Every structure is written in C-alpha cells, then in structure tokens.
Image 1 (cartoon, rainbow, N blue to C red):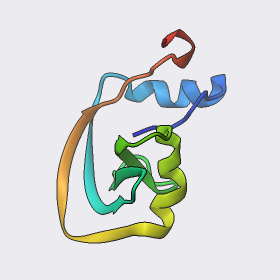
Image 2: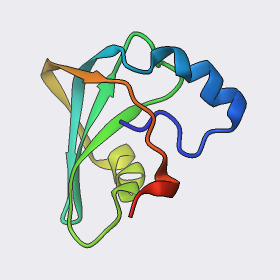
Image 3: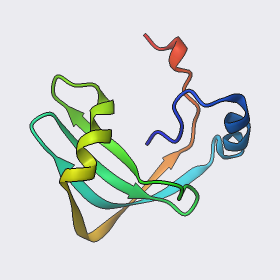
Length: 95
C-alpha cells in the first residue's frame, strides 16, 4: 500500500512516526481486469482517501491499479484482516 509517492520533506516528517510500526488493514473490495488485480484496504490511521494493494499486473505498471480500481471493484461481504510493517522505500535507490 503506497501512502505517499515521493513525499515532500514535510509529509515525510509527519509519516516518520509510523516507521517500524505494525499497521492493521482491512480488505473490503476486490478488482480485476485483463491487466491487473488489486484489493481495496482501509486502516484506522490513514483515512484521507481510498487505498489499495496491487496484487498482480500483466504488461502494465502497478500504477495502473489507480485507474481501474475506481470503476471495477466489488465490495466483499466479509472483510479480510491484514497486517503490515510501515516502512519508507527510497525509490531513487531501486533498480
């Protein structure tokens, strides 16, 4: 789940308090088309917009999920609980 992509220093400083903490998430929606698959998640901490986790892609960048998830998601009858560790990934150092 991407909270902020290339955040400005002020936003990074706000988010830094969560680094290393376990974040509880609930999966409440699912979307899939011929190019990608993703789930919609909610948390008690980050509630400023809808968040998702891209599960798979086919010849598209994970960013594609931002477009199709809005039009093609199905609400799940039962929410699935997930946990993740909050971390900062410096994309400038990824190859």
